[in-house]
Amino acid sequence: MLDLWTEAVRSIEPFVKPAHRDLWLRPIECVAIDDDGHIRLRAPNRYHKEWFEDNFLPSILKDLEARAQRAFKVDFELVEEAVVPPRAVAVTPAPERRPAPSASVPLAARPPELMPRYTFDKFVVGPTNQFAHAAARMVAESPASRWNPLFIYGGVGLGKTHLLQAIGHEIHLQHPEWSISFVTCEKFVTDFIGSMMSQKRSSGGSSMEEFRARYRTAPDVLLIDDIQFLSNKDSSQDEFFHTFNALHYAHKQIVLTSDKLPAELPGVEDRLRSRFTWGLIAEVETPDLETRVAILKRKAELEKVTLPDEAALYIAAHVKSNVRELEGALLRIAARASFQGQPITVELARDAIAKLVANAPAGLTIEAVQREVAAYFDVKLHDLKGPKRHRAVAHPRMIAMYLSRKLTSMSYPEIGSRFGGKDHSTVISAVRKIERLCAEDPAVRSVVNTLEGHLRQP
Image (cartoon, rainbow, N blue to C red; front, top):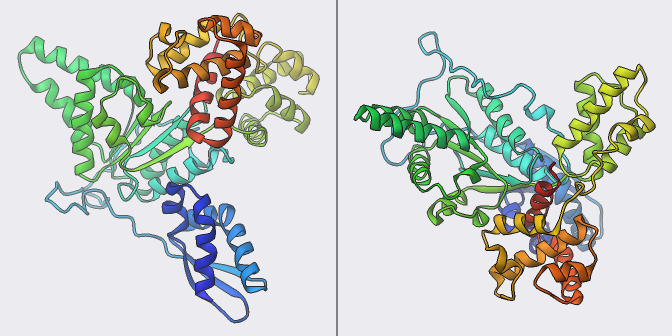
C-alpha cells in the first residue's frame, strides 16, 4: 500500500513548482496505510501539515483512491524540528552564542523599529501570499537553518514589510536573548556613507569598525527592507557583500525584501544576486477579492469600525492595487462616517472613495508608462520605442504596450504610434502575449503587478 502512496505523490510532482516540492511536499512522510484504509502521515510541524492539507492532499487522495478503488482517512503526527541556534551548527570555529537567558545574561531589547501592528496574527493570509506567509513562519520557527537567506519580493504595499517585521517579533518571543536588527536598505547605505565620512574626517578607523560591528557582529538576525535600494551604489554593495558573508558564515539569519526577483534587480552585482538565491525565494502578489474583503474586515475589527459586508465588498471591488491603499480607503470612509454621524453604507463608501477607485490616475500618459518600464528593466527609453528586437528590449516593450492599453484610454493604433510607429496588430499581439504570460508565469505576473502598482501611485 505504501507503493500506491508513492505513486500518487509522483503523479502530482510535475505540476508542483520545484521550490514548493522541496519545501512542502517531500518532507511529508507516509508512516503506514492500514488495511482499513487509515493513512498515517508524519509532518515536521503544523505549518507543513496545513500547507500539505490545503494544497496537495486532495489531489493525492483522488489519485490514490482511483488506484485502490476505495476511500481513505488521513491522520497526521507532528515531529517538531529542533531549533538549531545560529552559530551552533558551524563546521569551522565560530564565536560562541550567548547562553540561554539567566540572571546574569540580560535579555535583548525588542528593536523599536518593530511595530506592534506587524505580527503574524494580524496578517491576513490568502492564495496570493500563502506561500510567503508559510515561509516566513518557517524561518521564524527555525532561524538560520535551511532557509537562509529568505528573500521576499512583490509589489508596493502588498505586505512584505509586515512579514519581515512579523519574523522579527516571533524570533524575539522565541529567543529573547538574541539581538534582532531591522533596518531599511536606505538606512544601511546612509549609515555606511556616514561612517566613511566620519572616518575620513578623523583619520581613524573607529567609525567603520563601529559600523561593521553593528551590522556584521552584533545581530543574530538581520532584517533588511527594500534591498533594491542598493542598485547602482557600488561601494555600498561591496560593504553589504561582506556583511552578508560574515553573517551567513556565522549561521545568522538574514531576511530581505525587494520589489523584484534577485535576477531582475538592475544595477546590482551578480555576486550579490547569486547570494540572494542561496536560501528561499517567496513572492507576495496582489490580493484577490476574497482576501481584500478579509483584510478590510480585519482592519475594521482592529480599528473598532463597524463595517457591513456589502460595504466591505464594494470597497474591495474598487480598490485593487495594494493593501496600503485598501486600508487607507477604509480609514477615509470611517472618518467620513464619524464626521457625518452616520453608519457606513455602500452609498457612503461610494462617495468617500470616488477619487480613490482603482482606475489609472488622471493624466497618466503612455510616456509615463514607458519611463517606468524603461527604468525598471534598466533599458534606454529610445530603445524601448525603437526597432530593436532582442529579448532584453522586446520583452519590456511588450509589457509597456500591455500597461499602456490597460492604464490609459489610448487605442491600439495610438499606442503603436507612440512606440516608433508600430502597427496596431503588433500592439494587439503584445497585449495578448503578456496576458497569457501573466496567467502562466508567476515571475512575469509579479513584474507586471509591481509596475502597475507603481504607476497607480499618485
